[in-house]
Length: 95
Ligand SMILES: [Zn+2]
Image (cartoon, rainbow, N blue to C red; front, side, top):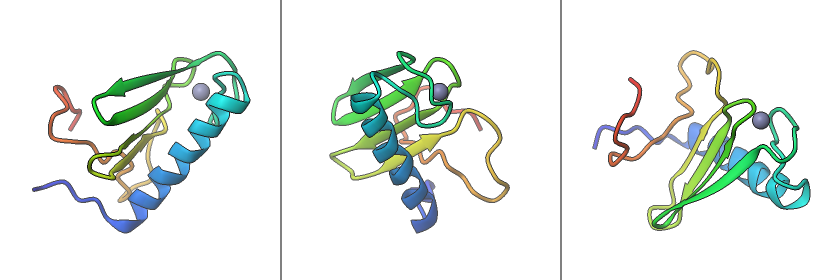
């Protein structure tokens, strides 16, 4: 398994996911990143729940089966910090 789900990125991703879920519910599909409303869609992929903002391309996901969190702020990530901890089943994961 070559995916490195280190503690830091998982913690960051989890925070984004919790924020995304709260904004989705409390702010009418709001986005915790760009703070827009009616721009976030929730998707279910089996056991995986994903929130995606169409305005700023932010996304956050959680797989209940594996417990893995993933987040993507839609723009440049800090060097050395891989926010996208994706699963191997992703069809076209950017490298
Ligand atoms: Zn947004």
